[in-house]
Length: 65
Image (tube, rainbow, N blue to C red; front, side, top):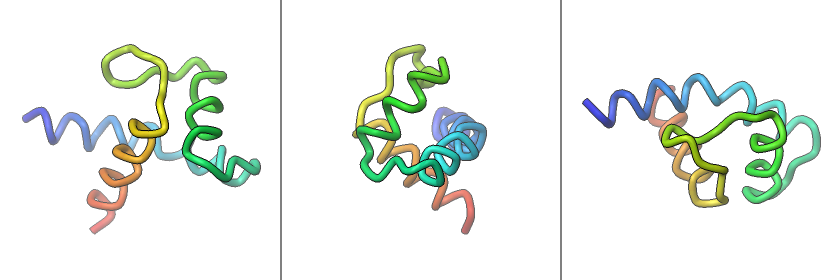
């Protein structure tokens, strides 16, 4: 159940991650800072880290398949 919730949350954040990448964010840290700047929190209500972005990107890739 938690994995499915994480996948759903990742799908909701995916457009913001894509926008960050299109806007020139090249690193996971830059994407994390972009998400924080937009006021988007992690599923636990925390600030984004590079690891959290990487994990979310993995879930987005899994959801596409």
